[in-house]
Length: 108
Image (tube, rainbow, N blue to C red; front, side, top):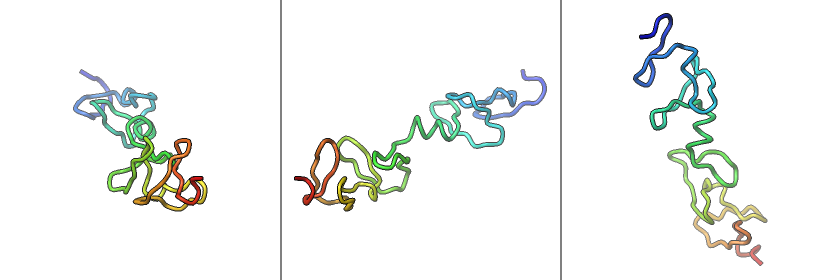
């Protein structure tokens, strides 16, 4: 049983100084936390460890986002562009050169 200040979270009781991110150890305080497999994580670590990232921009592909899976990577639909001219390639034929997408005009 905990004596002194305590908080209830994820079905357990913690001293406030003991409720920390399961990865980096940062105190949560009044900041939001994210639950994964029964462990609490700060937002930065949860995003780094558990989200799908766009290969082009590096930002998470979130629920509701349009996205493309190509060349063994995931892209936001607006980020799936020709490496040379930046023409959007979503739904278009494209060419793989060195693991990067190219439009027909720049695939040579």
